[in-house]
Image (cartoon, rainbow, N blue to C red; front, top):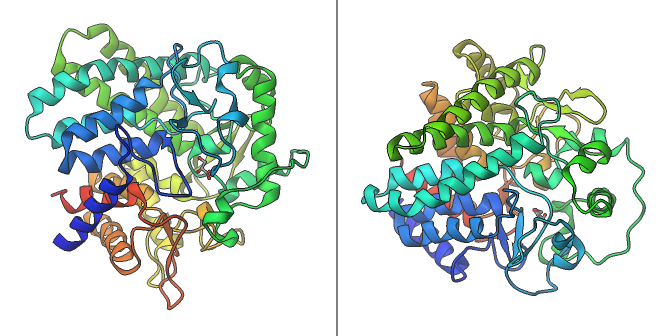
Length: 432
Ligand code: DGY
């Protein structure tokens, strides 16, 4: 295991670009929002200065209205599509003047990532001093979410693009895309020059992805217009779990800092409402799992994905409901021929064990589920998720995602020497 950790550290060293990390060489040449949070957690074990810088750089790209973009285009390169020239973040009046970015966000991991930095630190006083100004930025980001993306005042925020979910091409979105008539765009894909096309989203899917962005751009990325017009508008359990977990982390950190009563009160109010609505609206009794809700078409998306189990991490389910989740996970995702945890229901006909978020195992979601299971005292299954993660990386390398089936075909897919795979492996190896 020492050797594996050394390899992981090398991956992070290679992907470090003077102030931030790229997810991997070639396929993803810029800074990604939730990648940075996970990467910082891994870096914290080996180089706290870099971990803090990773978060500082991400938050330096925050917009005046509190929004934090999903990609920050630090460099000019035409090896990625769609790049800065397609996204045109400057259309939004509050956009950063310093950085070009996308006009969409990603699961809000910054709050709990900062708290992890503090708990991992061997010099917590000093770390606290450095991250204190960052906490206020994250707080402002949560204000943005609750003020602009909770249209029915439920405590549940929406995402307006599948790329905001992080689970980019999940079969969940098929239901929504089937309601859309997207034009055929002419463009040159770059991802499929780095990775085999069978492991990436289809052209048709990219047409939908670009179409949603074009609609947002027509209205200068106005939240109000997006809420009114975007064909994609979803309450995502993974996204909202990250927000709720980050609320909790901010509360903890502000209590340690002191003199932040008002913010703590506001966070607690959000927190209570969010958890209550989450349990009321996003749980499907029949499936025994949390599900997504399609706000645009006013209908639940009744499918089980790895996102369905992530609410454990933020302590959202009752003990009783957590047991139901555990049962669903073992029955559908966890037979002896499968690694935990496939990204989509392996018993569904939409499952594809090779294609990106349509089935493969992802180490970041495994890390979330592992920590969630531990929180509820489900230590046997927690250990299994951890050991499956370690085994996949040890056998196949630091890949972006892995085939969930245990057989001779099993292998890693997507980008290699992938930062969050390395970072979260380091965290799991050092988590006692
Ligand atoms: C991609 O290019 O596939 C990215 O994951 C989008 O965030």
